[in-house]
Image (cartoon, rainbow, N blue to C red):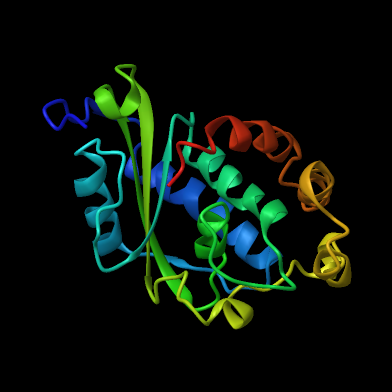
Length: 209
């Protein structure tokens, strides 16, 4: 991929990005029985430096890392990662290329997060101006082999999704996303952004790393 054309602009200010990221991230972490994370400026700097390169690949840094390309906002990218839960087998937990963003998002021992959202218009974005979202996680990075059973928990039943249903594989695909959307509405967070996630995930699944 070309490295000559880097970021053209920061799409979202630091303060508004911080609010959007923490609200969305901690909503999903609460839903999946994980403690809230805190904003970390060191992680923000790492994410900003890497996002500015506009390379559609992982940085190889010391942190857990999620990437998303082409979403209009940080919240939309996080929604897409969370929707990977519909593909995750809670009864046989483990690493998967189709659910790695979700498992990092809700990893129990992760306590800090930092993100950058940058507009890119190079080869990585197909020549069009598209947002690149880079998210870093610490102090414990996620997706560690052998730890998925304890680090990735099913959604709590009071949010409208029974753990046994997930474990038995009853809730899948559109049904899971729809029920997540209903749960979000009950919490006053709005169902619209979740209902739009399923389509976005399948359209961009090949691009997400």
